[in-house]
Length: 373
Image (cartoon, rainbow, N blue to C red; front, side, top):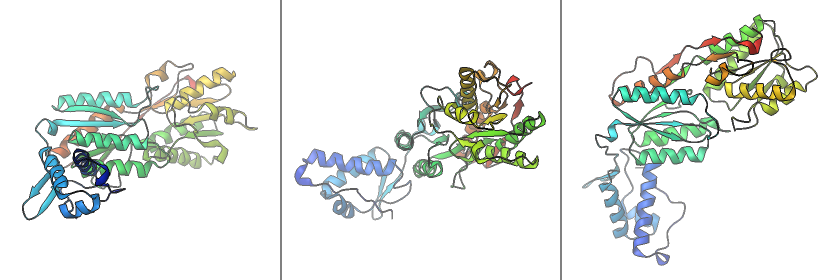
């Protein structure tokens, strides 16, 4: 039996009957929707809930009865009350995509969203979008909201917060506790039953780094970010290529961007790199938004690209082809990633066996003038 606890007890002397009832209902409702008590798990008895909440048995029983009507709980005579997400035929066709977008930046996930929407429509499902804005609290609140709408399955784009692994694990847990199927994009889950789809980040970054080395660059810096799985793979591809060619990577050449805002990432870091006594000859950016910011900063400071420093990115956003100079980058199959994530999610909802639990899609090097074509 799952232990249900409150942060504080309610004092019925300070609450009227209606308020006590609403408080009990919202408390139990939140425990269910947040995943604290999961699908198929048993609530404590009415008497135990009364003791914990300091409310009458009549009030607790009324709250439970309402949640039974909402399809969140089910009662069995002689056995007790259990969490049960009863989904309607329409809700069984409802999917969600939880992304981590900043309101002032259109990044790679715009393309992924289009792919997911297209595939959901083709398969006869509705896809709703939710946005965590890369905030842990907002992500958990969105998970509660998706559970409240009884979404059947969610595609999760991982957060890049100071503790991304713990945050993403909490979101996955909340969704799974509500009986949802979950597919991760760009990240593995600690839950071995959660599939994922990602690019071949390590191989693509290895190829990009090798291309710069082949063009004669030896002092190469790397601008990275919070270390979700996709980030770690790109870092590994870079470091492996440098090691294979006997090139050192000084600590000052390996920088994590200081801002969580993509519109600012790479700006102060370029100032730092170019102010060094021995500045890098080339800068590899974790993704195109960082690289495009770096290009603009170079233009502002009068640094020639690629004459003074080469800059490359990763994603192949539409803006990368028309930047000045056009950006060398890696084309991620973002549209296909969105499509595959939905396909995997739907197959899981149909209890079909996946051919691969963790799909890794190939990328393509796009060479343009920012690295000295």
